[in-house]
Amino acid sequence: YAAGIFTVVLPDAADVTGTITITITADGLTTQEFVIYVKVKMLTEQQKVDADLDLQPTTLTLSANYTLPTLVYGAYDATTVISAELTGYVTLTDGVLVVTQPAFDAADVVGTVTLAIKVGETTDTVVIPVTIKKAAVAVLNFTTTTPIAVQTYADYADALTYTNSIMTNAYTVTGTAHSITANTSSVAGATQAIVIRPRTETVPTVLCDGTAWIAFNTGADVIGKIEFDLYYWSSTAEQYFTKIEFQVKVDGVWTTVESLLDNVAGTSTIQHVVFTGLTCTEFRIYTEGGKLGKNDARLMIDNIEIYK
Image 1 (cartoon, rainbow, N blue to C red):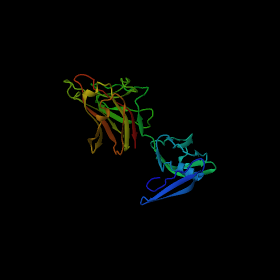
Image 2: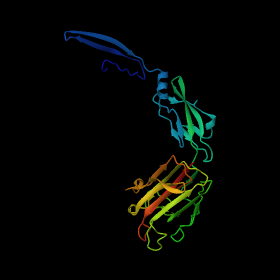
Image 3: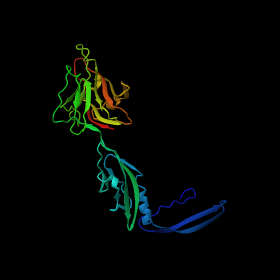
Image 4: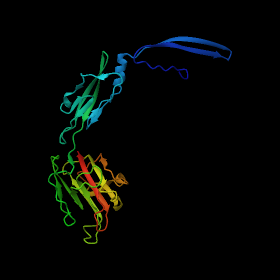
């Protein structure tokens, strides 16, 4: 009770009875008490079902498994229906929608999941529109059993084409002062990865000018989303970088989308970077910095996922 309003919470298990005593005083002279006998009815099965239905999402867009909300009163019933459009892409197992994404060259899959929730003898349903996003166009994790020859400062201007076993199409990868290394750096969780190595040198000045990058050309595939892991080779590498940027090519000109220096500032752990809303066929990770005559400036790129 507050400000003249009684707030009632319906009980779960049984009706509740009791009294409310109201005292009225007028002008500080007359007092009158009223006793009200109250019975609060317990929640009905339908009300409990409705409360559990309210926990459900109105729509779902999935690229991974989804755990259904934990119910307060009831249980998910076996009569849950997954529409025909989602056959082969969604199953329900122990309260989890298990997702299998369409191939990258297929379309997103759209359908519905009709969840049935049961309390006692009462069952009701909710229809949830579900979109299953297609898989990445390509996944580059640089763990091939046939290692690509490490590029050196003498030949790193050569084009590098890398076909991962997960990919169904090869994208041309070019750059300067980079390699694919079998070393895993000192960072926890690191594996074989791309290493970008800016370096300065008096001879040859053209090859070692303190810039380095890895660039990707996806040909006719217009890319909308890119994500990758980013980290320094070691905690000492950070001091040798003055610029780390994610760039896309616009009308033939490399254009910076975002600086990545802050993403790896002061950390020796793997950072995951995601860019969405893109419309590009060429992108690169570009760096500046380096140490004179040394390879101490080393930036690692791994687990690149490319989406149309």
